[in-house]
Amino acid sequence: MKINNFYRLLKNIGIFRTFNEKQIENIFSKIHYQIKDYPKNELVFFRGDTINHIIIILEGLCKGEMQKLNGDSIVIDYIPSQQIVAPAFIFGDVSTFPVDLITVEKTKLLFLDKNDFLELLQTDKTLLINFINEISNKGQLLSKRIWFNFTNKTITEKIISYVKQNQKNGIITFYPNISELAKKFEITRPSLSREISSLCNKGFLTKISNNQYRVDLSVI
Image (cartoon, rainbow, N blue to C red; front, side, top):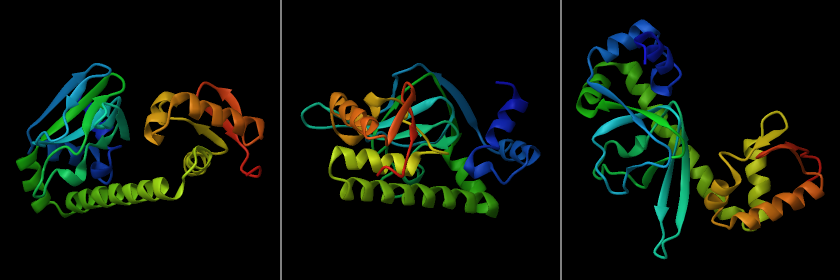
């Protein structure tokens, strides 16, 4: 990756968004870092592995997954590009991965030296505030997800709530696909597909392309 493209890409990441490219270059002159490429479906870290770096997804998509006692897996979250991996677990008494980290597609990860980053947080107030905001935003997102699973009991209710929260300009994309979303809802893919078809018959959803639908909120 060309260095100018690298700094330009970092400007889209939450903790660096308030800095210009020259300031980002200055930050990275004080920190050791490494960029690694991973293929699709690569198990990058196991649940319980120690977090020794600040890890940022530069390109690609990852998911956090947990294994149940019966061997089934549950998708806890999808982590898109330009996001920090498990920011709330980087520091603290138990600094380990809370879930398995798996690539969903070809992915490029940025590893920042944890000690270098900690020193920068102590000397750069803006970077510190940005990092705290990142942790707070993730905590709020987790709270919403817990509430979602607690209040939405039926498959239909889960789909409708998901659509209302994630639709943009009347369009919803079941991200990254129906199979992965079914895992997140802890249901089978056929069950999810049937309920989506039912919502299409009711006019709430109209299929545009694979995984993408037009939404009519007035129907529900």
